Image (cartoon, rainbow, N blue to C red; front, side, top):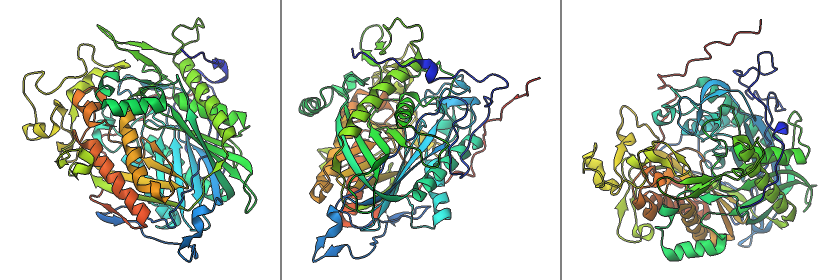
Length: 631
Protein backbone atom coordinates (compact mmCIF):
# COMPACT_ATOMS: atom_id res chain seq x y z
CA UNK A 1 0.00 0.00 0.00
CA UNK A 2 1.29 3.46 -0.89
CA UNK A 3 2.31 5.55 2.10
CA UNK A 4 0.64 8.90 2.18
CA UNK A 5 1.52 12.41 3.17
CA UNK A 6 -1.13 13.32 5.71
CA UNK A 7 -2.29 16.92 5.51
CA UNK A 8 -3.91 18.38 8.66
CA UNK A 9 -7.64 18.46 8.13
CA UNK A 10 -7.96 21.61 10.17
CA UNK A 11 -6.39 23.51 7.32
CA UNK A 12 -8.77 22.14 4.74
CA UNK A 13 -12.23 21.56 6.19
CA UNK A 14 -14.88 23.47 8.02
CA UNK A 15 -17.73 22.10 10.02
CA UNK A 16 -21.29 22.97 9.17
CA UNK A 17 -21.67 26.71 9.75
CA UNK A 18 -23.23 27.71 13.04
CA UNK A 19 -25.90 30.35 13.32
CA UNK A 20 -24.19 33.69 13.02
CA UNK A 21 -21.33 32.53 10.78
CA UNK A 22 -20.51 34.70 7.80
CA UNK A 23 -22.00 32.13 5.46
CA UNK A 24 -25.34 30.64 6.45
CA UNK A 25 -25.52 26.98 5.62
CA UNK A 26 -28.44 27.58 3.34
CA UNK A 27 -27.07 30.46 1.31
CA UNK A 28 -26.09 30.09 -2.31
CA UNK A 29 -23.16 31.88 -3.86
CA UNK A 30 -23.56 32.53 -7.55
CA UNK A 31 -21.20 34.13 -10.00
CA UNK A 32 -22.56 37.42 -11.21
CA UNK A 33 -20.04 38.49 -13.77
CA UNK A 34 -17.73 40.36 -11.46
CA UNK A 35 -14.02 40.00 -12.09
CA UNK A 36 -13.27 38.21 -8.85
CA UNK A 37 -14.34 34.91 -7.33
CA UNK A 38 -15.31 34.91 -3.69
CA UNK A 39 -14.03 32.25 -1.34
CA UNK A 40 -16.33 32.50 1.64
CA UNK A 41 -17.44 29.96 4.24
CA UNK A 42 -15.34 26.87 4.09
CA UNK A 43 -12.18 26.06 2.26
CA UNK A 44 -11.92 27.27 -1.29
CA UNK A 45 -10.99 24.52 -3.65
CA UNK A 46 -8.51 25.67 -6.20
CA UNK A 47 -9.01 26.82 -9.70
CA UNK A 48 -7.39 25.41 -12.71
CA UNK A 49 -6.05 26.48 -15.99
CA UNK A 50 -6.04 24.34 -18.97
CA UNK A 51 -5.73 25.21 -22.51
CA UNK A 52 -5.19 23.40 -25.68
CA UNK A 53 -3.81 23.84 -29.08
CA UNK A 54 -4.43 21.55 -31.96
CA UNK A 55 -2.10 20.57 -34.73
CA UNK A 56 -2.94 20.11 -38.37
CA UNK A 57 -6.42 21.66 -38.16
CA UNK A 58 -6.40 25.05 -39.82
CA UNK A 59 -10.03 25.87 -39.24
CA UNK A 60 -12.57 25.61 -36.49
CA UNK A 61 -16.25 25.18 -37.18
CA UNK A 62 -19.11 26.49 -35.13
CA UNK A 63 -22.48 25.07 -34.30
CA UNK A 64 -25.27 27.42 -33.39
CA UNK A 65 -26.97 27.14 -30.04
CA UNK A 66 -30.01 24.97 -30.43
CA UNK A 67 -28.54 22.40 -32.76
CA UNK A 68 -30.79 20.81 -35.35
CA UNK A 69 -30.70 17.52 -37.17
CA UNK A 70 -28.23 17.69 -40.00
CA UNK A 71 -24.79 19.24 -40.06
CA UNK A 72 -23.08 21.48 -37.58
CA UNK A 73 -19.88 23.40 -38.02
CA UNK A 74 -18.56 25.61 -40.74
CA UNK A 75 -15.02 26.00 -41.98
CA UNK A 76 -13.52 29.39 -41.41
CA UNK A 77 -9.98 30.70 -41.46
CA UNK A 78 -8.44 33.91 -40.32
CA UNK A 79 -5.89 35.17 -42.79
CA UNK A 80 -3.87 33.07 -45.20
CA UNK A 81 -2.49 30.20 -43.17
CA UNK A 82 -1.09 28.25 -46.10
CA UNK A 83 1.78 28.86 -48.48
CA UNK A 84 2.28 26.69 -51.51
CA UNK A 85 0.20 23.90 -50.00
CA UNK A 86 2.22 23.89 -46.77
CA UNK A 87 0.23 24.69 -43.63
CA UNK A 88 2.17 27.40 -41.81
CA UNK A 89 -0.08 27.01 -38.78
CA UNK A 90 0.81 23.36 -38.27
CA UNK A 91 4.13 24.16 -36.60
CA UNK A 92 3.21 27.35 -34.75
CA UNK A 93 3.34 27.02 -30.93
CA UNK A 94 2.10 30.56 -30.35
CA UNK A 95 -1.36 30.96 -28.85
CA UNK A 96 -3.47 33.33 -26.87
CA UNK A 97 -4.38 31.64 -23.59
CA UNK A 98 -6.70 32.59 -20.76
CA UNK A 99 -7.89 31.03 -17.50
CA UNK A 100 -10.55 31.92 -14.96
CA UNK A 101 -12.49 30.51 -12.02
CA UNK A 102 -16.00 31.18 -10.74
CA UNK A 103 -18.08 29.82 -7.86
CA UNK A 104 -20.82 27.23 -8.55
CA UNK A 105 -21.52 26.11 -4.98
CA UNK A 106 -25.29 26.59 -4.77
CA UNK A 107 -27.76 26.30 -1.84
CA UNK A 108 -25.91 24.20 0.72
CA UNK A 109 -28.68 23.16 3.09
CA UNK A 110 -31.79 20.98 2.76
CA UNK A 111 -30.88 19.98 -0.80
CA UNK A 112 -30.04 16.35 -1.61
CA UNK A 113 -26.52 15.71 -2.84
CA UNK A 114 -25.90 14.34 -6.34
CA UNK A 115 -24.07 11.07 -6.86
CA UNK A 116 -25.15 8.39 -4.41
CA UNK A 117 -28.91 8.74 -5.11
CA UNK A 118 -29.80 8.77 -1.42
CA UNK A 119 -32.76 11.04 -0.56
CA UNK A 120 -31.62 11.22 3.07
CA UNK A 121 -28.20 12.65 2.11
CA UNK A 122 -29.11 16.32 2.41
CA UNK A 123 -26.48 19.02 2.62
CA UNK A 124 -25.95 20.65 6.01
CA UNK A 125 -23.09 23.01 5.19
CA UNK A 126 -19.85 23.42 3.29
CA UNK A 127 -16.48 21.72 3.58
CA UNK A 128 -15.00 23.04 0.33
CA UNK A 129 -16.64 25.33 -2.18
CA UNK A 130 -17.36 24.17 -5.72
CA UNK A 131 -15.77 25.93 -8.69
CA UNK A 132 -15.97 26.11 -12.46
CA UNK A 133 -12.51 26.43 -14.00
CA UNK A 134 -12.44 27.67 -17.58
CA UNK A 135 -9.56 27.72 -20.05
CA UNK A 136 -9.70 29.51 -23.36
CA UNK A 137 -7.22 29.05 -26.20
CA UNK A 138 -7.08 31.00 -29.43
CA UNK A 139 -4.74 30.37 -32.34
CA UNK A 140 -3.87 33.68 -34.01
CA UNK A 141 -2.53 31.92 -37.08
CA UNK A 142 -5.77 30.13 -37.96
CA UNK A 143 -8.34 32.09 -35.97
CA UNK A 144 -9.60 28.96 -34.22
CA UNK A 145 -10.43 28.86 -30.52
CA UNK A 146 -11.69 26.43 -27.90
CA UNK A 147 -12.85 26.48 -24.29
CA UNK A 148 -12.47 23.64 -21.80
CA UNK A 149 -14.28 23.87 -18.47
CA UNK A 150 -13.77 21.54 -15.51
CA UNK A 151 -16.43 21.99 -12.83
CA UNK A 152 -16.69 20.54 -9.32
CA UNK A 153 -20.02 18.86 -10.09
CA UNK A 154 -21.37 15.34 -10.10
CA UNK A 155 -22.28 15.58 -13.78
CA UNK A 156 -22.68 18.07 -16.58
CA UNK A 157 -26.32 17.47 -17.36
CA UNK A 158 -27.68 18.27 -20.80
CA UNK A 159 -29.76 21.04 -19.23
CA UNK A 160 -26.55 22.85 -18.27
CA UNK A 161 -24.85 22.23 -21.61
CA UNK A 162 -27.75 23.64 -23.62
CA UNK A 163 -28.23 26.65 -21.33
CA UNK A 164 -24.54 27.58 -21.30
CA UNK A 165 -24.25 27.51 -25.09
CA UNK A 166 -27.48 29.50 -25.42
CA UNK A 167 -26.21 32.21 -23.06
CA UNK A 168 -22.80 32.35 -24.73
CA UNK A 169 -24.59 32.82 -28.05
CA UNK A 170 -26.63 35.66 -26.59
CA UNK A 171 -23.48 37.28 -25.21
CA UNK A 172 -21.10 36.87 -28.16
CA UNK A 173 -23.29 36.08 -31.13
CA UNK A 174 -23.61 32.65 -32.64
CA UNK A 175 -20.10 32.01 -33.94
CA UNK A 176 -17.51 32.62 -31.20
CA UNK A 177 -18.30 29.93 -28.62
CA UNK A 178 -20.54 27.14 -29.84
CA UNK A 179 -21.36 23.47 -29.44
CA UNK A 180 -18.33 22.71 -31.62
CA UNK A 181 -15.63 24.41 -29.58
CA UNK A 182 -16.88 24.50 -25.97
CA UNK A 183 -16.44 21.45 -23.73
CA UNK A 184 -17.97 21.30 -20.25
CA UNK A 185 -16.65 18.54 -17.99
CA UNK A 186 -17.50 17.45 -14.42
CA UNK A 187 -15.06 16.12 -11.83
CA UNK A 188 -17.80 13.74 -10.64
CA UNK A 189 -17.72 14.69 -6.99
CA UNK A 190 -20.47 12.82 -5.15
CA UNK A 191 -20.65 15.58 -2.54
CA UNK A 192 -22.05 18.30 -4.75
CA UNK A 193 -25.67 19.38 -4.92
CA UNK A 194 -28.45 17.88 -7.04
CA UNK A 195 -31.62 18.98 -8.77
CA UNK A 196 -30.10 20.62 -11.87
CA UNK A 197 -31.04 18.05 -14.52
CA UNK A 198 -34.14 18.37 -16.68
CA UNK A 199 -34.57 14.58 -16.79
CA UNK A 200 -36.59 12.62 -14.24
CA UNK A 201 -34.12 9.81 -13.56
CA UNK A 202 -31.49 12.18 -12.23
CA UNK A 203 -33.91 14.23 -10.13
CA UNK A 204 -35.79 11.35 -8.50
CA UNK A 205 -33.60 11.02 -5.43
CA UNK A 206 -33.37 14.80 -5.07
CA UNK A 207 -37.12 15.26 -5.13
CA UNK A 208 -37.31 17.38 -8.26
CA UNK A 209 -35.68 20.27 -10.05
CA UNK A 210 -33.98 23.05 -8.10
CA UNK A 211 -34.00 26.29 -10.12
CA UNK A 212 -31.67 28.04 -7.68
CA UNK A 213 -28.92 25.44 -7.97
CA UNK A 214 -29.36 25.27 -11.74
CA UNK A 215 -28.97 29.04 -12.06
CA UNK A 216 -25.89 29.15 -9.84
CA UNK A 217 -24.21 26.44 -11.93
CA UNK A 218 -25.09 27.80 -15.37
CA UNK A 219 -24.28 31.40 -14.47
CA UNK A 220 -21.01 30.40 -12.80
CA UNK A 221 -19.85 28.43 -15.84
CA UNK A 222 -20.84 31.19 -18.27
CA UNK A 223 -19.09 33.85 -16.21
CA UNK A 224 -15.97 31.67 -15.95
CA UNK A 225 -15.87 31.33 -19.74
CA UNK A 226 -16.40 35.05 -20.27
CA UNK A 227 -13.60 35.82 -17.80
CA UNK A 228 -11.25 33.32 -19.46
CA UNK A 229 -12.00 34.88 -22.82
CA UNK A 230 -11.24 38.33 -21.41
CA UNK A 231 -7.97 36.93 -20.04
CA UNK A 232 -6.76 35.80 -23.48
CA UNK A 233 -3.20 36.97 -24.14
CA UNK A 234 0.01 35.68 -25.69
CA UNK A 235 1.15 32.33 -24.40
CA UNK A 236 2.30 28.77 -24.96
CA UNK A 237 1.01 25.40 -23.80
CA UNK A 238 3.35 22.65 -22.68
CA UNK A 239 2.44 19.03 -22.07
CA UNK A 240 3.73 16.09 -20.07
CA UNK A 241 2.30 12.77 -18.99
CA UNK A 242 3.33 9.92 -16.75
CA UNK A 243 2.00 7.26 -14.40
CA UNK A 244 0.52 7.79 -10.95
CA UNK A 245 0.70 4.34 -9.44
CA UNK A 246 -1.15 2.93 -6.42
CA UNK A 247 -3.70 5.73 -6.49
CA UNK A 248 -6.63 4.10 -8.30
CA UNK A 249 -8.12 0.61 -8.40
CA UNK A 250 -10.47 -1.26 -10.71
CA UNK A 251 -13.66 -1.73 -8.71
CA UNK A 252 -15.13 -4.23 -11.18
CA UNK A 253 -12.31 -6.73 -11.80
CA UNK A 254 -14.61 -9.62 -12.68
CA UNK A 255 -16.25 -7.70 -15.54
CA UNK A 256 -12.87 -6.31 -16.63
CA UNK A 257 -11.50 -9.87 -16.82
CA UNK A 258 -13.99 -10.66 -19.57
CA UNK A 259 -12.17 -8.40 -22.03
CA UNK A 260 -9.90 -10.15 -24.55
CA UNK A 261 -6.70 -11.40 -22.92
CA UNK A 262 -4.38 -9.81 -25.52
CA UNK A 263 -6.06 -6.44 -25.02
CA UNK A 264 -5.78 -6.69 -21.24
CA UNK A 265 -2.14 -7.74 -21.51
CA UNK A 266 -1.29 -4.79 -23.74
CA UNK A 267 -3.09 -2.40 -21.42
CA UNK A 268 -1.47 -3.74 -18.27
CA UNK A 269 1.99 -3.73 -19.86
CA UNK A 270 1.50 -0.03 -20.57
CA UNK A 271 -0.30 1.01 -17.39
CA UNK A 272 1.12 -1.56 -14.93
CA UNK A 273 -2.37 -2.41 -13.66
CA UNK A 274 -6.01 -2.82 -14.71
CA UNK A 275 -6.81 0.92 -14.68
CA UNK A 276 -5.61 3.94 -16.63
CA UNK A 277 -2.77 5.18 -14.43
CA UNK A 278 -1.60 7.89 -16.81
CA UNK A 279 -1.89 11.51 -15.73
CA UNK A 280 -1.81 14.05 -18.57
CA UNK A 281 -0.87 17.61 -17.63
CA UNK A 282 -1.09 20.84 -19.61
CA UNK A 283 0.98 23.82 -18.48
CA UNK A 284 -0.31 27.21 -19.65
CA UNK A 285 2.20 30.03 -19.70
CA UNK A 286 1.84 33.74 -20.38
CA UNK A 287 4.62 34.98 -22.68
CA UNK A 288 5.66 38.05 -24.58
CA UNK A 289 4.43 38.05 -28.16
CA UNK A 290 6.41 35.40 -30.02
CA UNK A 291 7.98 34.08 -26.81
CA UNK A 292 8.50 30.38 -26.14
CA UNK A 293 8.65 30.49 -22.33
CA UNK A 294 6.78 32.53 -19.77
CA UNK A 295 5.05 32.59 -16.41
CA UNK A 296 2.53 29.85 -15.55
CA UNK A 297 -1.11 30.90 -15.34
CA UNK A 298 -2.78 27.53 -15.12
CA UNK A 299 -2.79 23.77 -15.30
CA UNK A 300 -5.10 20.97 -16.40
CA UNK A 301 -4.42 17.48 -15.07
CA UNK A 302 -6.52 14.55 -16.31
CA UNK A 303 -6.50 11.44 -14.11
CA UNK A 304 -9.00 8.60 -13.75
CA UNK A 305 -10.51 8.12 -10.31
CA UNK A 306 -14.09 8.20 -9.10
CA UNK A 307 -14.54 11.19 -6.81
CA UNK A 308 -15.94 9.01 -4.03
CA UNK A 309 -13.33 9.35 -1.30
CA UNK A 310 -16.10 11.13 0.62
CA UNK A 311 -18.86 8.62 1.34
CA UNK A 312 -22.65 8.77 1.36
CA UNK A 313 -22.57 9.48 5.10
CA UNK A 314 -21.20 12.95 4.41
CA UNK A 315 -23.46 16.00 4.72
CA UNK A 316 -20.99 18.77 3.82
CA UNK A 317 -20.57 20.05 0.27
CA UNK A 318 -17.15 19.05 -1.04
CA UNK A 319 -15.14 18.87 -4.25
CA UNK A 320 -13.76 15.54 -2.96
CA UNK A 321 -10.18 14.60 -3.87
CA UNK A 322 -10.08 16.50 -7.15
CA UNK A 323 -11.29 19.68 -5.47
CA UNK A 324 -8.65 19.23 -2.77
CA UNK A 325 -5.92 18.65 -5.38
CA UNK A 326 -6.91 21.91 -7.05
CA UNK A 327 -6.89 23.73 -3.72
CA UNK A 328 -3.43 22.45 -2.77
CA UNK A 329 -1.97 23.29 -6.18
CA UNK A 330 -3.45 26.76 -6.38
CA UNK A 331 -2.38 27.61 -2.86
CA UNK A 332 1.15 26.51 -3.70
CA UNK A 333 1.11 29.02 -6.56
CA UNK A 334 -0.23 31.70 -4.24
CA UNK A 335 -3.66 31.89 -5.82
CA UNK A 336 -5.85 34.68 -4.48
CA UNK A 337 -9.44 33.81 -5.33
CA UNK A 338 -10.51 37.43 -4.96
CA UNK A 339 -7.94 38.60 -7.52
CA UNK A 340 -8.93 39.18 -11.15
CA UNK A 341 -6.63 36.43 -12.49
CA UNK A 342 -5.53 33.81 -9.93
CA UNK A 343 -3.52 30.75 -10.94
CA UNK A 344 -6.04 28.08 -11.97
CA UNK A 345 -5.43 24.34 -11.55
CA UNK A 346 -8.06 21.91 -12.81
CA UNK A 347 -7.94 18.24 -11.91
CA UNK A 348 -10.28 16.94 -14.57
CA UNK A 349 -11.98 13.55 -14.81
CA UNK A 350 -11.07 10.95 -17.41
CA UNK A 351 -12.07 7.29 -17.98
CA UNK A 352 -13.02 6.40 -14.41
CA UNK A 353 -16.21 4.40 -14.98
CA UNK A 354 -14.88 1.26 -13.26
CA UNK A 355 -12.14 3.01 -11.27
CA UNK A 356 -12.28 3.67 -7.53
CA UNK A 357 -10.08 5.54 -5.06
CA UNK A 358 -10.54 2.48 -2.84
CA UNK A 359 -9.12 -0.98 -3.37
CA UNK A 360 -11.85 -3.61 -3.75
CA UNK A 361 -11.00 -7.13 -2.57
CA UNK A 362 -13.53 -9.54 -4.04
CA UNK A 363 -14.70 -12.08 -1.47
CA UNK A 364 -17.57 -14.03 0.05
CA UNK A 365 -20.10 -13.32 1.38
CA UNK A 366 -19.22 -9.74 0.55
CA UNK A 367 -16.38 -7.66 -0.86
CA UNK A 368 -13.89 -5.79 1.29
CA UNK A 369 -13.25 -2.14 0.51
CA UNK A 370 -9.80 -0.95 1.59
CA UNK A 371 -9.32 2.81 1.76
CA UNK A 372 -5.86 4.41 2.12
CA UNK A 373 -6.29 5.33 5.77
CA UNK A 374 -8.23 2.32 7.08
CA UNK A 375 -5.14 1.19 9.00
CA UNK A 376 -4.05 4.67 10.02
CA UNK A 377 -4.09 5.27 13.79
CA UNK A 378 -5.06 8.90 13.35
CA UNK A 379 -8.62 9.30 14.76
CA UNK A 380 -9.28 11.98 12.14
CA UNK A 381 -8.88 9.39 9.38
CA UNK A 382 -12.38 9.70 8.00
CA UNK A 383 -14.05 10.48 4.66
CA UNK A 384 -12.51 13.91 4.36
CA UNK A 385 -9.09 12.56 5.29
CA UNK A 386 -9.35 10.10 2.42
CA UNK A 387 -10.12 12.98 0.07
CA UNK A 388 -7.06 14.83 1.35
CA UNK A 389 -4.85 11.78 0.85
CA UNK A 390 -5.96 11.23 -2.74
CA UNK A 391 -5.93 14.94 -3.45
CA UNK A 392 -2.36 15.13 -2.16
CA UNK A 393 -1.24 12.24 -4.35
CA UNK A 394 -2.69 13.86 -7.46
CA UNK A 395 -1.39 17.31 -6.49
CA UNK A 396 2.17 16.05 -5.97
CA UNK A 397 2.31 14.03 -9.19
CA UNK A 398 0.76 16.83 -11.22
CA UNK A 399 3.39 19.26 -9.93
CA UNK A 400 6.15 16.86 -10.95
CA UNK A 401 4.75 16.64 -14.47
CA UNK A 402 4.03 20.38 -14.55
CA UNK A 403 7.67 21.17 -13.75
CA UNK A 404 8.90 18.58 -16.26
CA UNK A 405 6.65 19.78 -19.10
CA UNK A 406 8.89 20.94 -21.93
CA UNK A 407 7.09 19.77 -25.05
CA UNK A 408 5.09 22.61 -26.60
CA UNK A 409 1.79 22.01 -28.32
CA UNK A 410 1.86 23.41 -31.82
CA UNK A 411 -0.75 23.93 -34.49
CA UNK A 412 -4.21 25.40 -34.98
CA UNK A 413 -7.09 24.89 -32.59
CA UNK A 414 -10.22 23.08 -33.73
CA UNK A 415 -13.33 21.30 -32.59
CA UNK A 416 -16.36 19.45 -33.95
CA UNK A 417 -19.47 18.10 -32.29
CA UNK A 418 -22.52 16.16 -33.46
CA UNK A 419 -25.71 15.18 -31.66
CA UNK A 420 -26.32 11.44 -31.97
CA UNK A 421 -29.70 9.69 -31.67
CA UNK A 422 -28.28 6.90 -29.54
CA UNK A 423 -31.42 4.75 -29.67
CA UNK A 424 -31.19 4.43 -33.44
CA UNK A 425 -27.57 3.84 -34.42
CA UNK A 426 -26.72 1.16 -36.95
CA UNK A 427 -23.16 0.10 -36.17
CA UNK A 428 -20.95 -1.25 -38.92
CA UNK A 429 -18.78 -4.38 -38.76
CA UNK A 430 -15.65 -2.23 -38.43
CA UNK A 431 -16.71 -1.42 -34.87
CA UNK A 432 -18.68 -4.54 -33.87
CA UNK A 433 -16.03 -6.99 -35.03
CA UNK A 434 -18.77 -9.09 -36.60
CA UNK A 435 -22.08 -8.31 -38.30
CA UNK A 436 -23.94 -5.03 -38.41
CA UNK A 437 -25.82 -4.32 -35.17
CA UNK A 438 -28.13 -1.64 -33.79
CA UNK A 439 -28.49 0.17 -30.49
CA UNK A 440 -31.59 -0.17 -28.29
CA UNK A 441 -34.23 1.92 -26.57
CA UNK A 442 -32.65 3.26 -23.40
CA UNK A 443 -33.04 0.97 -20.39
CA UNK A 444 -31.17 0.17 -17.21
CA UNK A 445 -30.66 -3.32 -15.85
CA UNK A 446 -31.59 -5.14 -12.67
CA UNK A 447 -28.00 -5.37 -11.43
CA UNK A 448 -27.76 -1.65 -10.71
CA UNK A 449 -29.80 -2.35 -7.58
CA UNK A 450 -26.75 -4.12 -6.16
CA UNK A 451 -24.62 -1.00 -6.50
CA UNK A 452 -20.97 -1.02 -7.48
CA UNK A 453 -18.47 -3.26 -5.70
CA UNK A 454 -17.19 -0.36 -3.61
CA UNK A 455 -20.65 0.87 -2.62
CA UNK A 456 -23.31 -1.79 -2.06
CA UNK A 457 -26.88 -0.49 -2.47
CA UNK A 458 -29.30 -3.38 -1.78
CA UNK A 459 -27.49 -5.97 0.33
CA UNK A 460 -29.45 -9.05 -0.80
CA UNK A 461 -29.02 -8.37 -4.53
CA UNK A 462 -25.80 -9.37 -6.27
CA UNK A 463 -24.24 -7.96 -9.41
CA UNK A 464 -24.12 -10.08 -12.54
CA UNK A 465 -27.82 -10.91 -12.80
CA UNK A 466 -28.48 -11.75 -16.46
CA UNK A 467 -31.67 -12.32 -18.38
CA UNK A 468 -32.63 -15.91 -17.68
CA UNK A 469 -31.01 -16.10 -14.24
CA UNK A 470 -34.39 -15.12 -12.84
CA UNK A 471 -37.61 -16.38 -14.42
CA UNK A 472 -37.69 -15.17 -18.02
CA UNK A 473 -40.10 -12.35 -17.35
CA UNK A 474 -39.58 -8.84 -18.71
CA UNK A 475 -41.61 -5.66 -18.44
CA UNK A 476 -40.78 -4.66 -22.03
CA UNK A 477 -40.78 -7.75 -24.27
CA UNK A 478 -40.27 -5.63 -27.38
CA UNK A 479 -36.89 -4.41 -26.06
CA UNK A 480 -35.56 -7.45 -24.20
CA UNK A 481 -34.07 -9.21 -27.22
CA UNK A 482 -32.14 -6.09 -28.21
CA UNK A 483 -30.64 -5.72 -24.72
CA UNK A 484 -29.58 -9.39 -24.73
CA UNK A 485 -27.93 -10.21 -21.34
CA UNK A 486 -29.51 -7.27 -19.52
CA UNK A 487 -32.61 -7.96 -17.42
CA UNK A 488 -34.48 -4.69 -17.89
CA UNK A 489 -35.42 -2.98 -14.64
CA UNK A 490 -36.44 0.45 -15.90
CA UNK A 491 -37.18 1.29 -19.57
CA UNK A 492 -36.17 4.94 -19.28
CA UNK A 493 -36.34 5.51 -23.03
CA UNK A 494 -40.01 4.51 -23.20
CA UNK A 495 -41.28 6.78 -20.46
CA UNK A 496 -43.95 9.30 -21.46
CA UNK A 497 -44.35 12.09 -22.27
CA UNK A 498 -40.54 12.36 -22.28
CA UNK A 499 -37.77 9.83 -21.71
CA UNK A 500 -36.36 9.83 -18.20
CA UNK A 501 -32.80 10.14 -19.49
CA UNK A 502 -31.46 11.94 -22.59
CA UNK A 503 -31.26 9.87 -25.76
CA UNK A 504 -29.91 12.54 -28.15
CA UNK A 505 -26.33 13.00 -26.97
CA UNK A 506 -23.19 14.85 -28.12
CA UNK A 507 -20.00 13.35 -29.53
CA UNK A 508 -17.21 15.93 -29.58
CA UNK A 509 -13.53 15.98 -30.53
CA UNK A 510 -11.18 18.86 -29.76
CA UNK A 511 -7.68 19.13 -31.20
CA UNK A 512 -5.03 20.97 -29.24
CA UNK A 513 -1.80 20.67 -31.14
CA UNK A 514 -0.65 17.09 -30.82
CA UNK A 515 -3.39 16.39 -28.26
CA UNK A 516 -6.94 15.24 -28.96
CA UNK A 517 -9.51 15.71 -26.19
CA UNK A 518 -12.60 13.49 -26.29
CA UNK A 519 -15.40 14.98 -24.15
CA UNK A 520 -17.78 12.08 -23.53
CA UNK A 521 -21.31 12.37 -22.05
CA UNK A 522 -21.02 9.24 -19.94
CA UNK A 523 -18.83 7.39 -17.45
CA UNK A 524 -16.22 5.47 -19.41
CA UNK A 525 -14.77 2.17 -18.21
CA UNK A 526 -11.03 1.62 -18.52
CA UNK A 527 -11.00 -0.52 -21.66
CA UNK A 528 -13.85 1.49 -23.21
CA UNK A 529 -11.67 4.58 -22.82
CA UNK A 530 -8.72 2.78 -24.37
CA UNK A 531 -10.81 1.80 -27.41
CA UNK A 532 -12.16 5.34 -27.84
CA UNK A 533 -8.64 6.79 -27.77
CA UNK A 534 -7.40 4.24 -30.27
CA UNK A 535 -10.34 4.93 -32.59
CA UNK A 536 -9.67 8.67 -32.72
CA UNK A 537 -5.87 8.35 -32.90
CA UNK A 538 -6.22 6.06 -35.89
CA UNK A 539 -7.95 8.92 -37.72
CA UNK A 540 -6.01 11.92 -36.42
CA UNK A 541 -2.61 10.27 -36.01
CA UNK A 542 -1.75 11.07 -39.60
CA UNK A 543 -2.48 14.73 -38.89
CA UNK A 544 0.16 15.03 -36.17
CA UNK A 545 -1.94 14.04 -33.15
CA UNK A 546 0.12 11.79 -30.88
CA UNK A 547 -1.94 11.78 -27.69
CA UNK A 548 -5.62 11.46 -26.84
CA UNK A 549 -7.34 11.91 -23.50
CA UNK A 550 -10.93 11.02 -22.64
CA UNK A 551 -12.76 13.67 -20.62
CA UNK A 552 -15.67 11.72 -19.16
CA UNK A 553 -18.91 13.21 -17.82
CA UNK A 554 -18.81 16.03 -20.37
CA UNK A 555 -21.55 17.94 -22.25
CA UNK A 556 -24.31 15.66 -20.97
CA UNK A 557 -24.86 12.52 -18.93
CA UNK A 558 -26.23 9.11 -19.90
CA UNK A 559 -24.82 6.87 -17.15
CA UNK A 560 -22.13 4.35 -18.19
CA UNK A 561 -20.49 2.89 -21.27
CA UNK A 562 -18.90 -0.54 -20.93
CA UNK A 563 -17.31 -2.83 -23.51
CA UNK A 564 -19.34 -5.57 -25.17
CA UNK A 565 -17.55 -8.12 -22.98
CA UNK A 566 -18.12 -6.15 -19.75
CA UNK A 567 -21.75 -5.64 -20.73
CA UNK A 568 -22.20 -9.41 -21.00
CA UNK A 569 -21.16 -9.78 -17.35
CA UNK A 570 -23.97 -7.39 -16.27
CA UNK A 571 -22.16 -5.93 -13.32
CA UNK A 572 -23.07 -2.40 -12.26
CA UNK A 573 -21.40 -0.62 -15.19
CA UNK A 574 -22.85 -3.00 -17.79
CA UNK A 575 -26.34 -2.81 -16.30
CA UNK A 576 -26.09 1.00 -16.49
CA UNK A 577 -25.01 0.95 -20.15
CA UNK A 578 -28.33 2.26 -21.39
CA UNK A 579 -28.39 1.64 -25.14
CA UNK A 580 -27.65 -2.07 -25.18
CA UNK A 581 -24.65 -4.30 -25.87
CA UNK A 582 -23.36 -2.27 -28.82
CA UNK A 583 -23.35 1.10 -27.04
CA UNK A 584 -19.56 1.44 -27.03
CA UNK A 585 -19.28 0.39 -30.66
CA UNK A 586 -21.89 3.02 -31.55
CA UNK A 587 -19.90 5.66 -29.70
CA UNK A 588 -16.67 4.57 -31.39
CA UNK A 589 -18.37 4.96 -34.75
CA UNK A 590 -19.79 8.37 -33.80
CA UNK A 591 -16.49 9.71 -32.45
CA UNK A 592 -14.76 8.43 -35.59
CA UNK A 593 -17.21 10.35 -37.79
CA UNK A 594 -16.69 13.54 -35.77
CA UNK A 595 -12.89 13.09 -35.89
CA UNK A 596 -13.08 12.65 -39.66
CA UNK A 597 -15.08 15.87 -39.95
CA UNK A 598 -12.45 17.67 -37.88
CA UNK A 599 -9.65 16.21 -39.99
CA UNK A 600 -11.38 17.13 -43.24
CA UNK A 601 -12.43 20.61 -42.05
CA UNK A 602 -16.03 19.62 -42.78
CA UNK A 603 -19.22 19.99 -40.76
CA UNK A 604 -20.10 17.15 -38.40
CA UNK A 605 -23.46 15.50 -39.07
CA UNK A 606 -26.05 15.28 -36.29
CA UNK A 607 -28.75 12.61 -36.35
CA UNK A 608 -31.07 14.17 -33.79
CA UNK A 609 -31.91 17.31 -31.85
CA UNK A 610 -31.70 17.33 -28.04
CA UNK A 611 -34.90 18.02 -26.15
CA UNK A 612 -35.24 21.37 -24.43
CA UNK A 613 -37.20 20.52 -21.29
CA UNK A 614 -36.53 23.79 -19.48
CA UNK A 615 -40.24 24.68 -19.42
CA UNK A 616 -41.38 21.14 -18.56
CA UNK A 617 -40.16 21.03 -14.94
CA UNK A 618 -43.36 20.49 -12.97
CA UNK A 619 -41.84 19.10 -9.76
CA UNK A 620 -39.52 21.58 -8.08
CA UNK A 621 -37.56 21.14 -4.88
CA UNK A 622 -39.11 23.30 -2.13
CA UNK A 623 -36.98 26.09 -0.73
CA UNK A 624 -35.41 26.12 2.70
CA UNK A 625 -38.18 25.32 5.19
CA UNK A 626 -36.78 27.39 8.05
CA UNK A 627 -33.81 29.73 8.08
CA UNK A 628 -34.47 32.01 11.02
CA UNK A 629 -31.96 34.65 12.08
CA UNK A 630 -30.10 34.24 15.35
CA UNK A 631 -31.96 35.69 18.37
